[in-house]
Length: 253
Ligand SMILES: [Zn+2]
Image 1 (cartoon, rainbow, N blue to C red):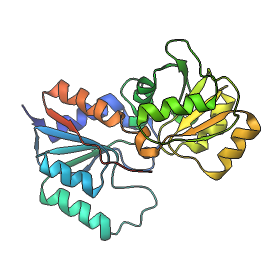
Image 2 (tube, rainbow, N blue to C red; image 1 turned 90 degrees about the vertical axis):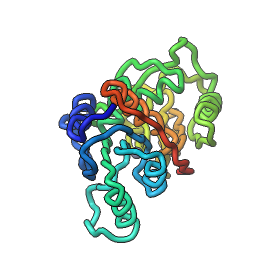
Image 3 (cartoon, helix red, strand yellow; image 1 turned 180 degrees about the horizontal axis):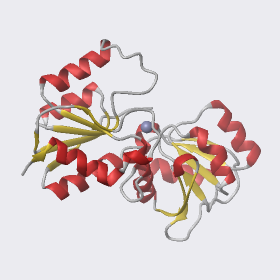
């Protein structure tokens, strides 16, 4: 089965509603390829490695969280940008990218899907554009301390995590926001969280964690955002009868 480039765009837009967001780059079709799409490859970032893997997998479209174009770029098609675009254009592959709309989708987005992975039930949202999620363990339990939560996150995501904050305090209310959301920590504290989970930590958050008595867990930008793109792409591929494959290009950050 196949669909058209435009119908696929329509399906992603209907699901993710990009018009509702103020974002750092264009959401939707970023690079136009062939008119008919039979197979989608999803991934976290439109890196050259993902594009090459998608070519090898005979994809007609790539669906990612991190596309090619961001506010603040100078617009030159040189270096890595030239290489990535050249591959996409030479193979006539469509590139669809959704940034904040993919973080935010209440069931299939990065935050919702990370919550599922970690066994968390969502009780509310917080922060700018409601991107942050709050909740607790779906089984009603709690973590004895920040180290126990950090161990759980590290085990689920299969990578080392960075932990800051109080050594001995039980953790029940958990806030999270995937990717580079360390700037949401204060909003998470204001939302009543005992711990905040995101991808990255910067220097100030370690101090805030100690001083406010709220644990901060950084589990990797890439690792925290591995689940939304395949969930959305699989959903839309199912709707339209397309083939779909998620390709994870590992990233230590
Ligand atoms: Zn990200």
